[in-house]
Image (spheres, rainbow, N blue to C red):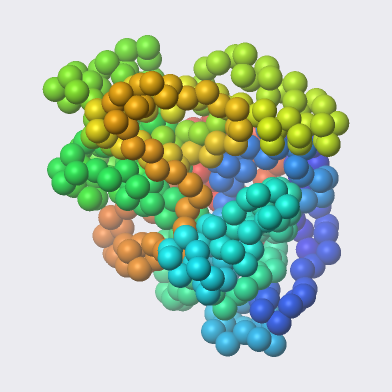
Length: 391
């Protein structure tokens, strides 16, 4: 089959690779009809080389048709149409039954002290081949799928794999009071959905991003938008009686703008041999924290900061005095995809499309064009906000 593989920093290629096969009775094979490039895939493209091997298949936002099932599968049949959640969970362990599928005890990657295994996402999360490919092996497939109908187009459902439930969870974790204010830091794909979910739930949404095309997209879905400047935090305070917003979702993560020194350190680690780089990243890694610091700054006293953007540093310095003094609540973590499906499937199937799932994709291309699209997405060129690939 053809698949998008990692070959080095800022280097991916579409290659012929071995077809996946049923390895356990609990597996299924899905023929991929749509798959997307996620913002967190760019972390692999840029930063996580020490934890990836050349030839690893990337991608964790996928859907398609079941073409084979293992001997122990009871809830799937050949021909079923499914979305594949990005985290691999069993549905039976303590964590799964408590709605924490991203911490699944069956698939936790204990070697690295990580939570549930993920598709296409480094040794840290199991090194499971991903879905930017023609076919995908789905472990624990009886639970690890989202059944969908056959009538609506892929684009209605694809984002259930990751970014839509990630945004929904981010807003739920933000604990916005009824009729309250929600700031969104970053308007990439997750930030776009965070803003729309906030508007849908009746909050005043104040959304910040340096890119004009991203602000324009958020504005047409009801958010008040702001360019990122040195005055933005004060501007948002002024709009909230001087006290700051009730809640913030940081939808940016580790590759925020700012702090050139940290960027240099990240690049330097990437030049080390993989074993040495892994040790440094696991024990002394740092992130660019501009978005998180701004979130802590702009939230009101007693408010909540919800972190949906991915962070990976083990030596990040946070303003603990400010956080303690302001009595800020922090919530964060990988999305528990299956937990939110009862809320989200009716919304994506609603003819009115209240969350605008049909208005997010800016680039829809064949899988063969993926290498060029990784570069365009990473550089924020050509108005690129969301890429969907068709194998």
